[in-house]
Image 1 (cartoon, rainbow, N blue to C red):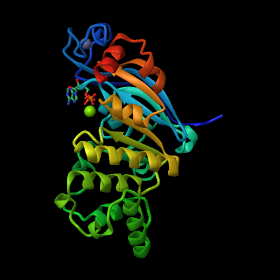
Image 2 (cartoon, rainbow, N blue to C red):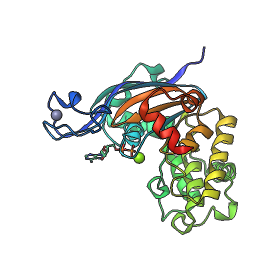
Image 3 (tube, rainbow, N blue to C red):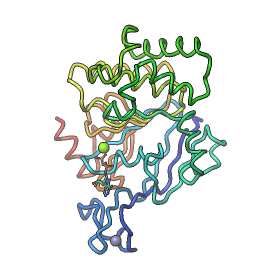
Image 4 (tube, helix red, strand yellow):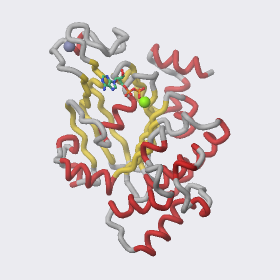
Length: 278
Ligand SMILES: Nc1ncnc2c1ncn2[C@@H]1O[C@H](COP(=O)(O)OP(=O)(O)O)[C@@H](O)[C@H]1O
Ligand SMILES: [Mg+2]
Ligand SMILES: [Zn+2]
């Protein structure tokens, strides 16, 4: 039986004080994530899922449904309000990584996870070269030897089809598509068992989008990395993922095999999403 890489139970994120009635007046049934009693934003409520080795899990939903909040909580960009996340490559999944001390969280980010943001310059330092960005990540993952770093950087850039002539160029001078490839190389540099990808093709030209998605599929196939792919675009979800969660107003409204969800969506909201794609 395949083992999970990460399992998440009851993940919640609230902006504001919260009041004890937040849960009963927010969510898909009320079509809002703002509590009418206290004004808090319930960005995530009771989100649970597992991701297995070598699997790509999709998270889809309209803008503001909480997709980015999930991956940002798991990558510790945001502090979760509550919930349990067990990352199996870390301490055999015994710890709740959401409540670890900062130094342990930093270790997990540096060694066990990769993140690719919609905006490449969130994941890259624009005033560093492509090679410099990757070297930085290798160093934080404790890979020190200079020649080793140069060779590994070149190999990583090659994997994302970045011509080596770009290795010594400043990232902010590159095109959006090229920056995104470099960001992906950087995210892969520490050989993470878990890669998080948030709307990574949204800002790109359509022709570039297709190539980047193709590349992600190839990388996943070759390295068998487990991935969470966030997108508002069901086309992206269909192309990349095995299983999908549909999010609405901070809650999971549907969860299952991607093919099944696309062919025969049960939830009214998912039906709407699917039909709007056709
Ligand atoms: N700092 C904040 N304060 C209050 N609400 C926020 C804050 N950041 C995000 N939100 C809200 O959290 C919800 C989920 O946002 P997000 O995860 O970015 O959605 P998605 O990625 O699906 O578009 C949205 O309603 C958003 O407005
Ligand atoms: Mg988002
Ligand atoms: Zn409330």
